[in-house]
Length: 95
Image 1 (tube, one colour):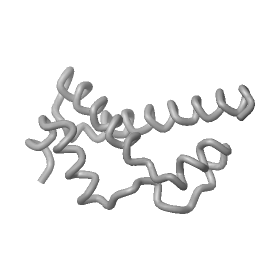
Image 2 (spheres, rainbow, N blue to C red):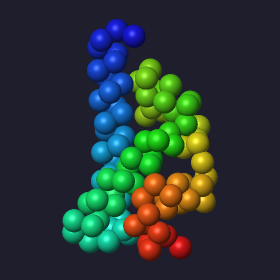
Image 3 (spheres, rainbow, N blue to C red):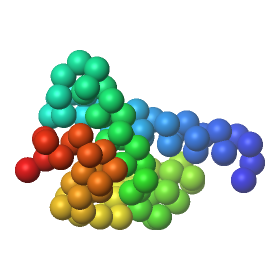
């Protein structure tokens, strides 16, 4: 992959993580203040670890904005389970 394409993919990857973190912070479901920041950082890491292979390919090719398939490898229940397993503090907030 050419360096410019690698930089674009890395930038897209960072924007997706930042978006996941920002959405978590805006939703304010996982605490307040420093606790919310820490929990949202962990949550964003979980999102990044669960991105589907097809969405990863879309990121690599710069087509993520028009991507129509599943963005994560798991459904909502699987995502919540991964959150609790990876970020145990979130268990108190997830029903």
